[in-house]
Amino acid sequence: MAADKLIKSRFRYYHISNDVLLGNMIAVFLGDWLTRIMFLHRAGDVSQAFLSLAHSLNIFYSIVCVVAMSLIIIWYERPIRHCLKYFYQGRDPDPILLENARRRLLNEPYMIVILDMVIWSIGSLLFWFAGSLPGGIAIASGMITMTLAFFWVEHVSQHNLVPLFFPEGGLSRVKGVKIISVKIRFAALIFAVSVVPLAVIHLTMHHFKQMQMMDEMTLLMLISRMEETVTRESFLFMGVAIFLSWLVAYNTRRPIVEIIRVMGHVKQGDFSQKARVSTNDEIGFAGETLNAMIQGLKERELIKDTFGKYVDSSIRDEILMGRVPLDGELKEATILFADLRNFTPLVAVTPPKELIYVLNAYLNEMAEVIKENKGLILQFIGDEVEAVFGAPVYQSGHELSAVKAALAMRHRLGHLNKRLTQEGISPIAHGVGIHTGSVLAANIGSADRSAYSLIGDTVNLASRIQDLTKEFKTDILVSEAVQSILSDFYDFQPMPEIMVKGKPDPIRVFSLNHET
Image 1 (cartoon, rainbow, N blue to C red):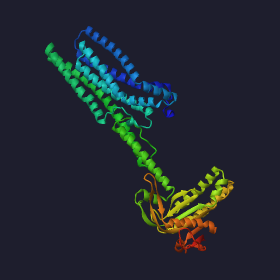
Image 2: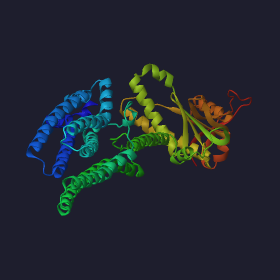
Image 3: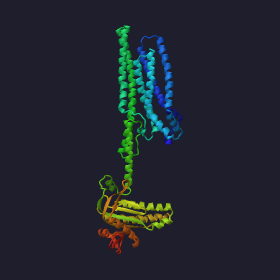
Image 4: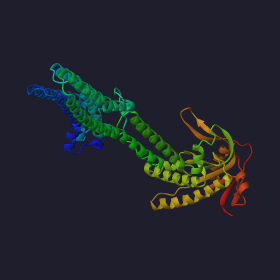
């Protein structure tokens, strides 16, 4: 994990570590600058001594605030800074430390707002008691400062810190985190860029009205000065509104564009992309939900592809679309069993790795042949293969498909033995038994694990016929039912009648030689 989060340069390490601190300080200084501009435009003809006192008090309080806020923010960020140091060194932080850092990172914008609120409240009271700052200006500037700080700190946090601490998303899963909805964010934005400026302009006009009553200034001079002050304040608030609107729009648009980008890949069938989640609001939740959906689609596609390795794609799609009943039905189908000859003695004398290599090579070749002939592999039982043709999706001529598969299996086995011989491995042999008839098809198993299975006399007899290949020393045997249907297509050699387990009367089987 640390390699993915490695901070590659010292400059970037210090830059990321102090992003939030610097961002908040910039917001506070902007608020202070805005306050001083509005104060000077309203000050009128106050004495130079009063302005000097107000300026000195402002500098002193600003220095105290910067020191106090820096210490508080650095203390609050201790887990975050420790983790960043680990990332810079290429190490993984302690999970408990990382969890604490993530929680503080997501809560930091709200902590900054509370800190700024306390600082501005104390400052407003201090300057108001000193008689050097009107209360309305302090409140308005404080509100704008807190809004600027919140959205700017959130911006730098989402841009630089969240990708490091949440490379896989999961912001909504962190406990103890305050979540502010998109609706509240936009409400705060509208309040900061419309309600507050209008209130300040109203207070400005009220201030000049008081000056008219108290100082008896001429109406023309008063209107001119009020117009100049309102114009300056309007331009200031317009600049703040444009910056805040851009910041909020950028922070809102970026995750939405990311979600749309990933959805475009999903639409094209590409499930390799994941949305980068940087917020824990509704948009962030949508991004995490999209990622979970993509993971589900990816797993579904994997299951689909894996299933397609054992059954023809048309059969696979019918099953996955739910058009095949799996709760039990009687079907006409053809069953094929294939089993390696003398496999048990082979286990005793063959090295394990070589044995598994041979077994997997054999099963892989046989599985491909069965799939090519529209068969479904029901199960591998050690060195034995059980397959069905004509189920779960019915297909006409399933007997012919099974026999074609058996002949192709004979052909593939010959090629496999040539390859094994070249590699210094002894060739192998197998026996194939085929029977057709009525079977009961269903999902069979326990509550937490089941498999599509076929049961009935047809299945049992197909297995018995496969066993007979050893006795008759041939590789493919079919039942009389299969031979009667395909006698015009293949050269079948009748075998002597023989008794098998489970049958009261002897049965007749036929060896499959070649096509007629």
